Image (cartoon, rainbow over all chains, first blue to last red; front, side):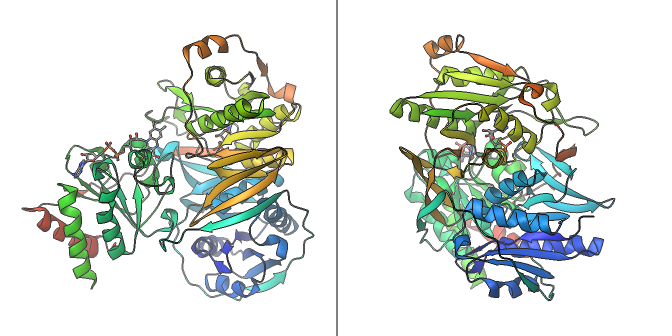
Length: 323
Length: 256
Ligand SMILES: Cc1cc2nc3c(=O)[nH]c(=O)nc-3n(C[C@H](O)[C@H](O)[C@H](O)COP(=O)(O)OP(=O)(O)OC[C@H]3O[C@@H](n4cnc5c(N)ncnc54)[C@H](O)[C@@H]3O)c2cc1C
Ligand SMILES: Nc1ncnc2c1ncn2[C@@H]1O[C@H](COP(=O)(O)O)[C@@H](O)[C@H]1O
C-alpha cells in the first residue's frame, strides 16, 4: 500500500524558498495523524546542505537529486525526477507549493503519473483515513473538498496560508541519481527584480492602490507606508490598465492571488474580480471615501475618508509605533 | 503554421455562484457563459501568429452543447475551424480527463504551437496546459507574457516571483497565456457572420478513445467561510482615524 507524505521542496540560487517550510510543516501535521513519515524531494546543483534545514521543519528523509541538469529549474527535467521518486517509493501523498514553479511542475508530474492534483489549496486534512484537499473555486465564491481515486494524491498549497512550524527531525539524506533526458527548453536570461521587495504572493503585508490613487506619482505615499511596514505595493486592474503600475503588481482574477497577513486597499472599490485575488488575506483594511464601496463588506477595518489625508497620517502613526 | 487554441466556456466573472442544497455542485441555471478570459489571450496570440506567419488556427473545446457558442466566438475573432468535444460522460471531467480529451483530439492534427489559458476561472485549477504538454510529449511554457516566434523555436518571457525568465523552446510546444501577453480583439460583425459558416467537428469520448474516470474528485462544495463583520474606524479627522487604525492593527489584529 502506498505510504509516505512527500513534499517537493523549492529552492532558488541555493536557498530554500519559504513555501518549502510551509509544505514541510503541513506534511508533518498530516503525518502525525497517520503515523506516517515525511520525505522531501530536493533538486538542484550543490544543494545537499539544504537538507538539514528541511529537517528543522519536520522532514524525516530527504531525497536529494544533485545534478547540473537540474539547475536552474527546467520543467521537464524536474518533472522526470520527481515523478520517478514518487513512483519508486509508492508515495501516498505529494505536496507542492502553488508558486509559479510548483504549479508548472505539479501538473506535469500529475500527468506523468496519470494522477489527481488539487491546486492552490488553502487546507489539507485527513478525513476518515482519507486525504482531503480544500480549495477555492470560482474565484473564492465556493470552497471544494477534493478527494483522490489514485495515489499519490497530489495537492499544491497556496503560499503564505500554511504556517511554517519548527519541529526538528533527522532529515536522513538519500541521494538519487537519475539519467536526465536532453531538454528542449533553455533558459536564455534571468532578469532579477532589483527593487529588494518580496513578490506579492510571498509578502506578509501588501499596501494596494486603485483608481482612487489618481495617477502614477501618487503611489509614492503607498511606497512610503509599505517601507515603514516592510510590505510590498500592489494595485487593482484599473491602475495597471491605466499604466500607473506594472502588470506584476496586479491583484485579482486576472492578476495575482495573494494571502498576506495584512492587505491595505487604498482607493479600491472592491470589484468581485479584485476580491477574487485578495479575500484569503488574514486581515483586510479598506481606505475609501465612499462608505458604500463593496470593499467594506470584506474589510476587518474600514476608514471612510480621503486616502490622501489618511495614508500619510497612517504612515506617520505606524512609524512612531514601530520605532 | 498550424496553431491550436484551447478554449473553455466559463461563468462570467460577475456571475453569482450558488451552491446546490446537497453540496454536490453549483446551480448553473442563471449563469451567463463566456470564453475564459485567459483563453482570449491565447486566441489573440494565435491569430497574431497566423497573421504574421500564415497558417491556420484551430479552436478546441471540451464542454456541453452550449460550449459551441464560445467556439463560435473564437471563430468570429478570426480562427478558422473548431473541434467541439461534447459528451455527458465528460461533464464532471477533472483536469486529467480534460487534458486527455484535448490531447486525443490534437494528436491527430498537425500542431506547431498550442495555446491554453494559464487557468480557467471556474475551477481555477491551472493544470490543463501542462498536462496536455506532457500527454503530447512536448515542452510547456506556462504563464507567458511575451512570445517571439523564430522559425523552428519560440522565445518567451515568463515572470516568476521576483524575476523574469527568457526561455527558448523548440516546436511543437504548449504555451499558457496570462494577462500582459496582448489585448484580445473583439469579434467584428462581419467576423460573426463568417463564423457561422466555419466548420466545427463534434466528437464524443468514444470517438477519441478516452476514459472518463476522474483522478481527483470534487466531493463537496460549500459557500466560503463567512468573515466576521468589520469595524469602521471613527474619529474627528483623518489623523485621529489613522492613529486609531494603527492601534487596532497592532493591538487587536496583531498584524503590524
Ligand atoms: C474579466 C475581468 C477580469 C478582471 N480582473 C481584475 C483583476 O484581476 N484585478 C482587479 O483589480 N480588477 C479586475 N477587473 C476589473 C474590475 O471589474 C474593476 O473594474 C477594477 O477592480 C476597479 O478598480 P478600482 O477599484 O481601482 O477602481 P474603481 O472601481 O474606479 O474604484 C476606485 C475607488 O476609489 C475610491 N476613491 C477615489 N478617490 C478617493 C480618495 N481620494 N480617497 C479614498 N478613496 C477614493 C472610490 O470611492 C472608488 O471606490 C476585471 C474585470 C473583468 C471583466
Ligand atoms: N474543457 C476545456 N476545453 C478546452 N480547453 C480547456 C478546457 N479546460 C481547460 N482548458 C484549457 O486549459 C486552460 C487551463 O484550465 P484549467 O487547468 O482548468 O484551469 C484553460 O484556460 C483552457 O485553455
